[in-house]
Amino acid sequence: MNHFNKTRRQLVQAGALALGSGALPFAHAQASSPLMTQLANLTGQDRLNKLAEGARKEGNLSIYTSMPVDDIGALTAAFEQRYGVKSKVWRSGSEKILQRGLLEARAKRYEVDVFETNGPELEVLSREKLLHECKSPHLGDLIPQAIRPHKEWIATRLNIFTCAYNTKLVKKEELPKTYADLLDPKWKGKLAVEAEDSDWLAEIVMKMGEEKGIALFKEIVRKNGMSVRKGHTLLANLVASGEVPLGLTLYNYKIEQMKNSGAPVEWFSLDPVVARPNGNGVARNAPNPHAAILFQDFELSEGQAILGKRDFIPVSNKVPSTLNKMPLIFADPKVTLDDGNKWTRIYEEIFSRKG
Image (cartoon, rainbow, N blue to C red; front, side, top):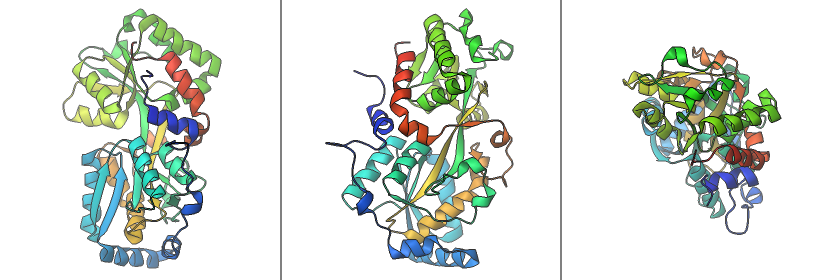
């Protein structure tokens, strides 16, 4: 049996979650309501006033998110305090969020207002016509890479792939300077990656030169092995505990949070540095359309500072961050979907959980 997650494989191979006989045909079933279209096109101060007034009358907001509980809680608490709208949050993995969104759409059961999750899953929802462009007035404040051409979902934060090490087991002066340095025998049995980071690998090896890059990682695994763990939080915890001395695909914000809590961990980067955008999209048939659009605007404005304080990498130029200005390669959700079968296969060929 394949060790890698089948749901994610279906996502990257088909561009949508295959259920039963095939991908779900939603495109003709998801027409926008006249009210959603009207609200999405509001401009100026009139936009904020009408959205806030309507959201207070609706009183509720439903969010499907893969953001950690404490972090989404900080956002929704600030949103409720400002606008008096209570948030109902369903949290799960990004692939589960995609699956639930598609199933509910097929059943024409419209329960979600905002999807807040990984870029590839949001891109599938956009392709399946389940999201609505809402013309946020805050787009001009964002880094260009945050905005997809269709604008049906907008990046709100960046997950930057970094390496992380246990400071009790690895000395700073011993750290590799390049990926080629991982060929050193001193790293034998000490390395690990997360199980589904094929988009990270794709961007890295394309930058190196595909043939050269793939050969390098195969040689690293051949010489020194590679443990494969499911879940970035799990991998971060294993680095903190010392079970994994050096992890290669950690989100820097999680390491920052753990370090600030006293864990013996630190992160560093190897060039090229890959960023995976996460974002939010308003559901085309949101049951609370005022609140849905208002929350998207909130997360792209005031919410950016909240995310920054919680060690996320914001996408707003108004929130100071050295990391969103460093040279980054952005994992393209289109590549993840359209070429996902290729990169998932290569990832599996290079790494295995037996490593």
